[in-house]
Image (tube, rainbow, N blue to C red; front, top):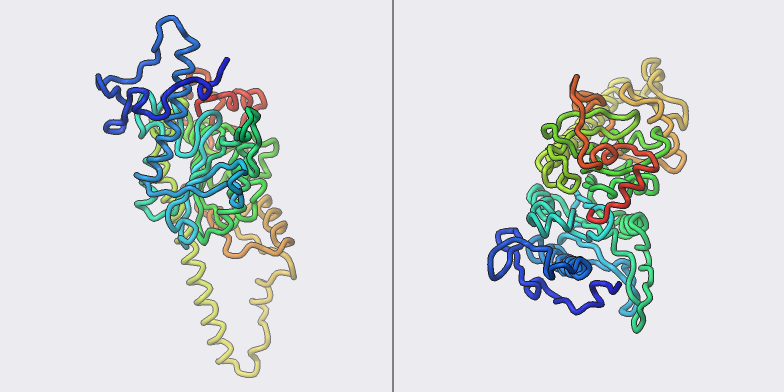
Length: 422
């Protein structure tokens, strides 16, 4: 069957007879919502028409990211020539020069592209429900620099041929994310980085954590997931990620209700809706509340540590001035606080697993002013626990509520990856 691009369909939204009015896609003539059936009894044509409209929607969202959110496109790979197949990401002005905060947005799998959570919601509900635009605007108001990934844009047709060629640095969602992190995020001046990831974006995030662990440990202070599908065979290896993450999953229980959690998995709470694609927008207020709580806790602790360090230096100077020629000696009390060379002193709030991770980093040169490690010490009452309320059970959402949003088996992972709309 011919693809939507091979057919003679319009190349813009108006050509299909629609426009966005008050954030909703409406028929230009009648003001009515989208209608799937264009030709009665011709399912194949109607599907092709829908897919062609979806591709136009992608371009419309790109334009809105530029016009409404003031984002700009940056090539991937960054050194691509005119003849090389390439894709792009979006960055806000000065995002990489913002010394404080950077927000990275990662969509799910399938047909969605940069700026989208779910194409179906854009067409049938609204831009708010289906795009990342509300998240971008809210983050900009707070003071974040913005980076929007485009993880599903992996191939381009070769000029003069119908063959598809893999885009360098973007052959898969995971490869795209790692390339963008190395080429853009590494250069960012932000001391604090947050991520928001939907559905398969959870897999992309766990892979990023594994491949870019040093930078994660140093700067990532919060990860908000919405109905994430993620899998890791060894939960202990991801303890640091789990400690700064939360997952809003599909459930009919009230928003933020704590849900049952499997051992070693990211804390799960209800998104307040049982539809997978709607979990992002339905939880937006809670997501940003979580990010602010994490940010405030991390920066408050950093300030306290800096103050304690300053006081310690002043006390040491005072002691040196008061004891004159004996200033080079170390008293017994101080000796008991000094560790052997190369040994990390573990605080009361760190676990044995964290100790192993820190020693591993020290062998590679150490990570100074570790944002994530400071975040680990936040009091337990600020983090969500494992179990849900007594007697409450999470309601499955059309077959997606049970698997999405937890560490999943291979079968569940395959189901999550097969979702084409997000």
